[in-house]
Image 1: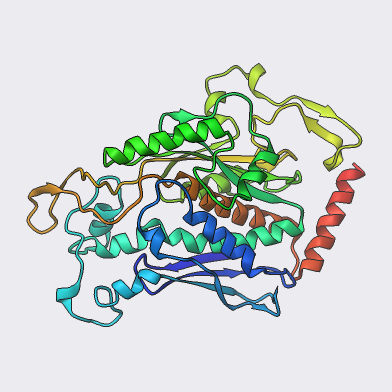
Image 2 (image 1 turned 30 degrees about the vertical axis):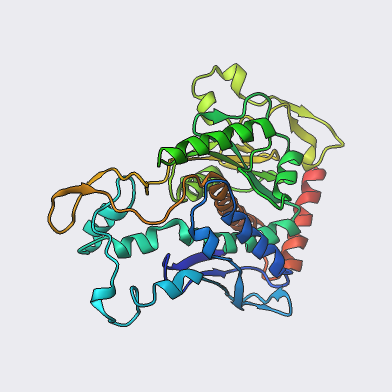
Length: 391
């Protein structure tokens, strides 16, 4: 069973990802993991923190001589900003006078709910763990999942389809366009249509001038996924259930869509469902679809088309022009706390969404194909592909 978790605080010494259940024998390339972390840090509208951090994946266990060895994999990601916070957030008692309080909760953030839950006098500790800085560790774990999926011929990437009031219109973006986006050495807003991307940039500029923030929609696409991952027999085994939960867990995501779900809800069935055809020369038993409005999932099971999951990201809740709030100590009206922050994080959220989809698909693949070594997993996988071809 593939399991994973993260730990660490936004301004602590480091973040950590712990991944167990990864089969032995997977080649782990440091440059690939670091590239994933770099992609997460990019995008027009990012804040000052990204100028401080240079995220790299420091593997301390579970990989030897460049390959996984079957034991739990631990990845550390150093926080360069820690040097500025050692006295404010020491592990030991330290000097209370150097503590940096978050004196008033930010509307839309976990501040107030977390303070009430844990009985804290103010929100510093809530901010430290609920911050999206934690997603760097998720991306590192997702990088390992991508390496496993790559061995099965499955790729996972994202692109931005909407930002504020600007969105892509017209035909669906081709997979090859998304691949080309992922190869860029300079990331603007990770939109495949150049004209739309420039209008998105103008939207970010307008929002910045108003000291506001802006959200949007990212689409994660998994390519070359075989039919049969997931299950319809129990609600919590349905792959769309698991994918929706995974993407919804990303900070600031407030809605998740599989395929064309939101449009489908307002359409007739005759215009929604993907008609089935047969071509003996095609992979995966030869059955094909003339469209992919289902997003590659029917009944909680992959159907051989690309898996398409979209995350709807609200504007982040730390504003340079703060909203009204209340002081934790005095209960008097004040402006919400402000910490150095971003204006737009939609492209970065897409990379985090990739990690969550990759981890979920890797779990589903290992559930079906099993194996303690990559050789065993691939043998089981290849046998299943032969079974499909012979159907």
